[in-house]
Length: 397
Image (cartoon, rainbow, N blue to C red; front, side, top):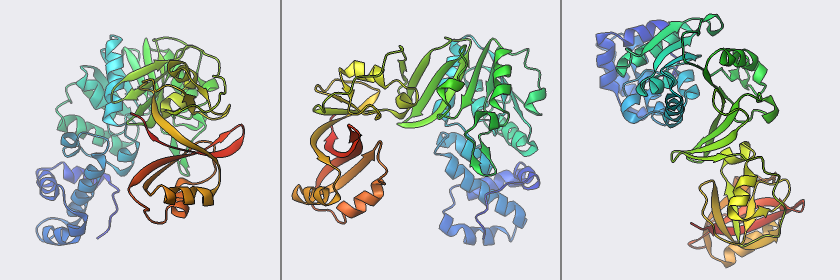
């Protein structure tokens, strides 16, 4: 039994038949350890290729539950690339709410993939034209709109997005492919389609949202765009270039709570002596270059001019950074750290780093080969005044 999750046109078409739907219901939630036995049994009464396709789809649905609500994932259809490249539902819904708040009632979703963003837009009451040039991907997107009862709001079209007329829509949403044959693509002009084309499409509509990689250089953001970096559960997910909103604004938004930090063009915070508390800004804040706004909010400064850690004397609340109480500051020294952890009977060690080449797991193995007790410690591998240091502490809610 192979664990190949690739989907082809013929096997996917078979899944959409009554027999295919019945098989999908039967294999739902199959334990990977039982796949061979299940496949052997089902192949006695069903075509082998259809059984393999159903089991592959069951695996994809299980993987997709990390991005989509479980109730949706178990009814939707996926390809391996579709699961990997889909937007997490919380992020897609947030973008859809923003567009709806702008008065948008129709969107041309270009490079729609398996339809995750189109589904979120439709659930927000927006009419969607979802376009993808890959025949199988377009078929999967159409099946997903039907499976979730949203096909009345979503038209799926198999076409080259560069040839689609979007003039009748209130907004354009573009999610260009950012992976090539060798993995992730970092040059925005190597996106498919390239960022320059996406910007032209955005400028042709009253409103637009372009999904780009979080690492996009700030100098690549056009002056008339708003740039927003989004994290979900502490993980940076994407950057979005908005058109028809607030030109020049830079913001970071933290989901699921939806806290938004707006840039105010503050100068870099000063470097100051280490205080009692260390604030670790959310990755979206760092990517948006808004560490200065966090430092001002907590009355702090930087521990080093090149490091995005903020230090302060008071435990002030902020949703944009995680606060730690610092107990020790040491020069980087593995033997000294190991002795200190043993002395304090540490059993749980969390290692974080910014500005250090040391791998956290490697350090953990060296300094805590076995639990010394029940105490928990967080170690920050970082720099102060250009020199490597270790800061010890614990979360300070």
